[in-house]
Amino acid sequence: MQKDFFNFQAQTTQFAAGFEIDRAEGSYIYGKNGKKYLDFVAGVSANTLGHSHPKIISAIKNQADKYLHVMVYGEYAQENPVELCRLLAESTPEPLEVTYLVNSGAEAIDGALKLAKRFTGREEIISFHNAYHGNTHGALSVSGNEYHKREFRPLLPLVEFINFNEEKDLEKITKKTACVILETIQGAAGFLLPEENYLKKLKNKCEEIGALLILDEIQPGFGRTGKLFAFEHYGIVPDILVMGKGMGGGVPVGAFMSSREIMESLSHSPKLGHITTFGGNPLIAAASLATLKEVLESNLMNEISEKEQLFRSLLVHPKIKNINGKGLMLAVNLGNPDFTLEVAKRCMENGLIVFWQLYKNEFLRISPPLNISKDEIKQGCEIILKVLDGM
Ligand SMILES: Cc1ncc(COP(=O)(O)O)c(C=O)c1O
Image (cartoon, rainbow, N blue to C red; front, side):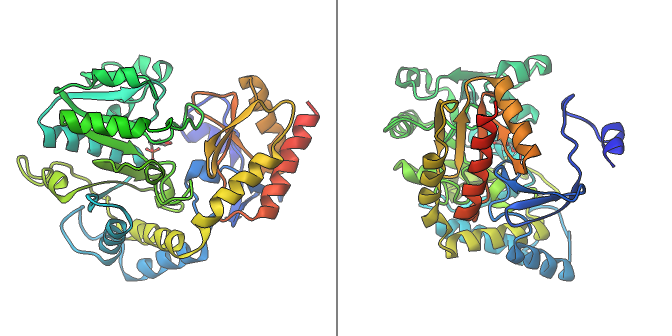
């Protein structure tokens, strides 16, 4: 299988692991080599409830027994997507109310940008250096890493980049700005948190000038920081909230959410302001709804802070410089990209899956399933410490 993987499945790097998967359950992935691996990455923040959670599997099976795809997005009323959108409205603060379901995080970002331009009638977009918003042309245009963009120009025009947490840069938001888009916690840059009151100042500036604030919560979304969405820690509400990854619990999904007034502008002049065939697919919505219900109804979000503290108390080593992040999105600074890649490789050899941050390879990524047990956290951290000792 590995040979066919390298020969026939398009590669995105020249150094993919090609790890052959047999099955996955809970916090573990089982390889075809007969070994099991503790998963500290959770499909890069996607597997909120670990692998093959029984409630997600059963929701998918129930829907599969009834029907699969019946119509393009937005035409028919179907139980799972409707219930998912209703529960999202109930679980988020006003004025967030209406959700547009799409296929991926990047598509949700594109939809959110279009919505902001359409609603404000303005053309300019402000984004952030070191932001990562996905890889469609639109999402790449607002991502802030030159290495990943250079070869794909021309991208969207009229996008300006400012520095995260730099108050002075807020002056660049003007009456021409349709929207300001940012990750509540910058992911690829190493899980950087907004500083005290930064988001409040940004939101005030947007309000004053009539620009919409778009928050990309594709990674913190569905409970990873101990709140359903990370913005809830910072006393603000975005005009448009973007989610993906963890909202699906392991299926491909994305969504953007806003007030009814804003979202309505996608339905006229022109009608069909965003079109998608599979957005709101009933099978995907079943998985997402099961994930949302479990995150809301269980005690998982209350346990996040304790689990974060456990990671922080265990991961103490002379080779660890500091740990960024919040909740179960943690980035361990090992100071050097090559060293970090080698640590990840050796952890894998010892039965632990860890990864690195997209732009800042010196950071080891830790984003396990939210329902990982304390024993599993201890076992995984022991492996990391043992690997570091041996280097
Ligand atoms: C913050 C953020 N935004 C957007 C995306 C894009 O999501 P997708 O890969 O589903 O298109 C990602 C994916 O890693 C992400 O982490």
